Length: 246
Image (cartoon, rainbow, N blue to C red; front, top):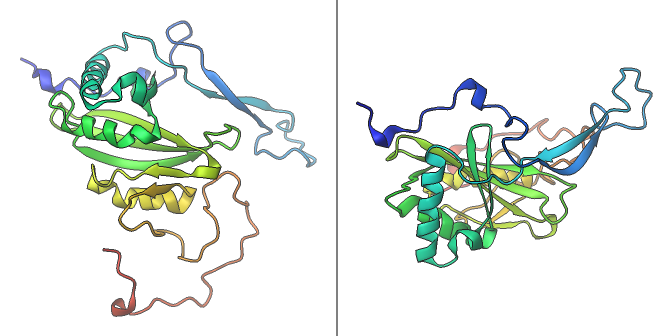
C-alpha cells in the first residue's frame, strides 16, 4: 500500500514540456530576441540575420493546479493568513509549467514566506537546494530574478520553486540564510555573477571571480570578449595568509 507522504512522484518525461494549447493561460511576452546570437549589423549569410523570436513567460496558473500542488498552495495560504500578509499579499502569481510549481514572491515578504514553507507541518520544506539568478534587461523594473529550489524531505521530496524580482537600480533581495543556512554560498555565487545584493547575508563576498573583478559576468549586458586576462603571473598565497570565509 502506498504511503500518502511520498506522493511527490517525479514528473513523467511528457510533463517536462510546455503545456498544450488550451490547457493553461496564454504566455506573456516580455521582449524579443533578434538574430541567432543577437548581432544585427554583420553580413550574416546563415539565414539567421532576420530571425525574430519572442521572449515568453508562462501565464499565471488557474486552480485546480493538480496533484499535490493544490495541497501545498492551500497550506501556504493558511500559514500566511496566520502570519500576516496572506497568500495574495505575499505572492504575485503562481505558475505551473513543465511539471513545476513556482511561487512568484514579493521581495519584502520573502522571509515570511520562507519561514512558513519551512515551519508549517503541512509544508515542511526543510532544504534550499540552490539559489540562482537570471537577467532580463528588457523587463523594466524587474530586470533581475533570484530563483530558489526548495525540497520537503518530510513530504516525500516535494520540490517547489520560489522566484523573486528586483530592478537593476535597486538590486536588493533579503538573504534567506537565516531560514536555510545552506543557501549561504549559493547567494554569494548569485551576487558574484549577477550583482544581486542579498541583504543580511553574513559574508557577501565573491566566490568565483577575483575580489577586484569589475562587474558581474553572467548579466546579459556584460561585454562578450575583450576582457583583459587577469590571471597571468598570478600567485596563490600560503594558507595562513588567505582571507577567512567563515
